[in-house]
Image (cartoon, rainbow, N blue to C red; front, side):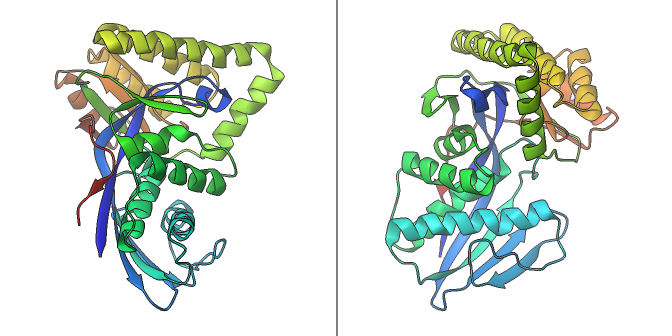
Length: 328
């Protein structure tokens, strides 16, 4: 039996624009998914998911890609526990040439699904690492990131970015631009997360931005402007200038809202954080619901968010310096 964990992430800047080759800067945070893998000889795949929703569940099936077990669970939870795991195990077979081995896979996650914190990437990264080690192979974080990206790319019909999986596998702050992924230095950021309890439809939101970009030149210009914000944000990050980082985050949120990917609850949390004195706040991830990230070294933003209508949870998150962790 092997156990691995990987962190979630927040975007300081660049979500959506990264799909069109603009840079993005995500940061790994110490909110993790953990996967336990134990091989079995009958070729079946048994997946138990816990902490991903109020009620965990277990499914056992042949592990055939595209097979959808019939269980009473939300579609997003079912996808996390089957399609992403299927894809991760396919990568394990590719590495080890052991395609007749089955697995008992247990997923435990503190990362809310579909909320912009990289839950699927953390599950895939953890699953690939745990299952390959269970078969006697240890991969470097860069290869885990690449194979996790292939998994997400397939499951998400080609709409995945390398940002989530690279950040989850390597930890820290990273810069992603196209296929170029690398770690960058970052100060100890005072991150505060607000969660509205919901989740956006990533595919629908990405398609919506694509449609706007194709219809209006100014929408394409907006996407490019987000890239410019990222480049300025890199300089502020290197200088440790929290005030400038916050201002740029505010700009980034405004542009994402103009592209139609914010929501009433996300805007409410963003303004709640700003009114409490945060240096800046913005949505993180695909949008439409889920999480915001704010910069505030004081307890004021966390307190304010806990009283903001539409916010179900607010918590402080530390930068995760380490990506994938091998626990057993």
